[in-house]
Length: 66
View 1: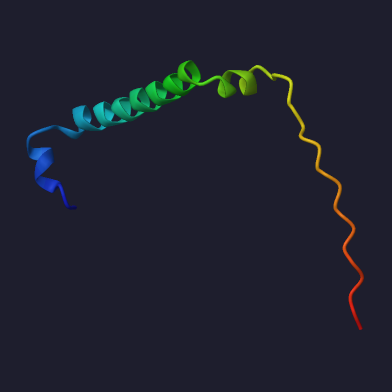
View 2: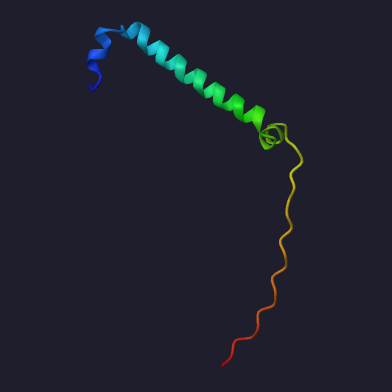
């Protein structure tokens, strides 16, 4: 284990739950920031009306020369 000596300072019964809690809090804060600071996420999550762009018709290609 790379950080084996860390567990002599911090007990695994304390360190592992703290690490998992830190990851959960960080993940929640990133998702909250995305939801609050963007407009498209709110529309996506609320099922906002989607705008479908119509494709332009393909131009007729000239006949190949023989």
